[in-house]
Length: 135
Image 1 (cartoon, rainbow, N blue to C red):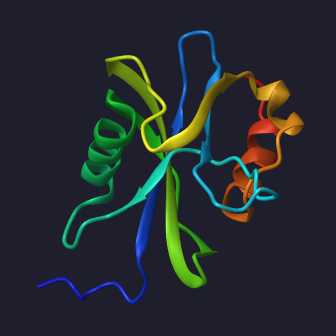
Image 2 (cartoon, helix red, strand yellow; image 1 turned 180 degrees about the vertical axis):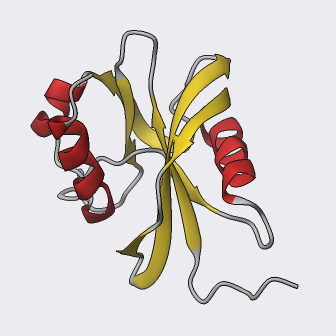
Image 3 (spheres, rainbow, N blue to C red; image 1 turned 120 degrees about the vertical axis):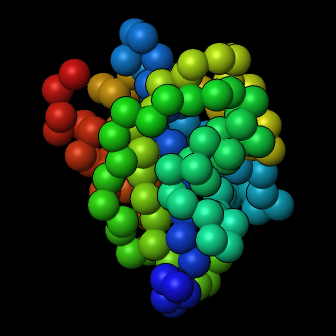
């Protein structure tokens, strides 16, 4: 039996369209000053593999079926006041058209325009990396 993780695991989707635009999301919030964007994400269910969790989160939150292209190693971060691991996955849409789901808003943006948005702390290292990586 595999040991139980010591911290929650969150999966995040770097969803890319054929024109290389990336999907970013603005969560619902009660705070008028908290307009921090992120990549769509969700927590793994107990015993769920990260890849299966990423597919489930995309289906539940965005109403799309995705193909995982590549996963990144986990990063430690703080979400909702607790330490967790977050795994980012590059994905492409197989079926469906991404909706806003539980998010206040979603937008397709090019990599070069990511710097025009304020992102939450867990997304910042990935945004910096995406801005450095030519596509």
